[in-house]
Length: 115
Image (tube, rainbow, N blue to C red; front, side, top):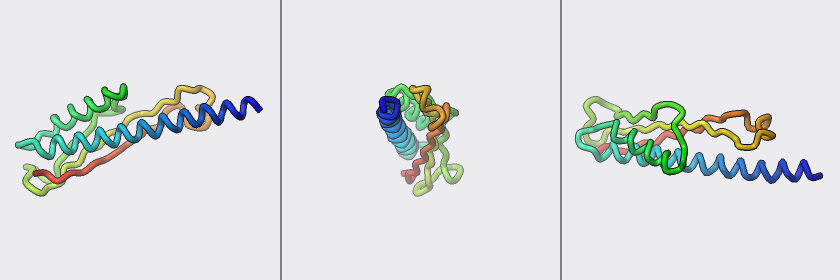
């Protein structure tokens, strides 16, 4: 009975950590899109720096370089700024690797109107 209870307990912890990671990655994408949407002229590197700062605040690292793009070039008023962030979630409990896998990519995208 104890192994089943331990699996449930640690499974709950890991699902909570996964949910937290999804929330932080979504917030990083929103912040990156918003930062670039209000920068004049459009500068995607400002958004990428903001994304990395938000991720660093939660001790996360992007799996690949985050992207912040505008729907047209040059970016003009009312165009869409899109930020995409991917982070690899790694489970801390080796017994859960068969359930979760060793690494699970968490990707979030946010869009804002360029002002």
